[in-house]
Length: 215
Image (cartoon, rainbow, N blue to C red):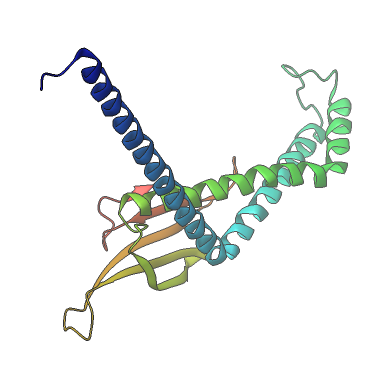
């Protein structure tokens, strides 16, 4: 039977509906997949947080030391006879000393605000490490943490490795297999004077330091 124009339009509409439904399904699956990846990254960040508390505390203390050192430096500088206030907004060195002494009374607040920023910086670096783990394939659905080792290094640095594993097959059928992967990381302390001392965050899927990823 010859196809009428009406039948052709109906088939086309049905085709469009099928494609639309397929697109919706694909989008929904991608959204769920991305959401699961973010959940796994979030869990990894929390795991890393639990293992780096001493390093975070040291970094936050370095922020407090730096903010204190900055103000003490200015007070000492302008307390010296003949201190030059040129190119500053102070009229004389006494005014400068008074200003920084008043700043020092607000030091707890200054440190508190700086440490809020510091905490976010540290969290962002741990998220960076989790992103690298994802790029190495360590956060895929079938992979789970099977072992890890974290050792405090010189200067309260940190050396660590994390092992993930997946299992396939069944023991009863003699097809059981276990596959393992390791990632290696370091937190290296960088001592500074004119800025806050901090850590360099390093993560790699190589046992050596070649091709390391650094933040």
